[in-house]
Image (cartoon, rainbow, N blue to C red):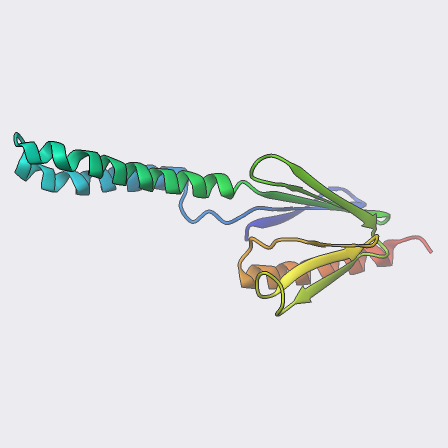
Length: 166
């Protein structure tokens, strides 16, 4: 599951969410190496001819395009969402791929989680509402992970509200 709950102290819960990585960096290097080897095989037949120099720029461009696409995917996946929840406040910070941060906070008593099966940018879209704003959380997760996140988040809010002073 690409999110974890921690308890920094007895009154606070913290949630960290990040996109799933199906291809680790080492796997990417192996993939590029295999691609170079497979593309190089047909070149052995044309070694020493002018055809080699005609094909080589296109093959290098193909490998460069694959590398660039994978690197771009890694850069776009540099998203981190951090939620801290205590009996008084709930605070969500989203760090986007370019490094800019978006923040939202609210009194935890008034915060609500909502699951939108349809109508959002993705099926089973999870939002937090409170303080006059609605914010998304975990939109980069898979559908099943968003359902689990909604259940976990709803339970954490319910527990927090029950701990609030009367």
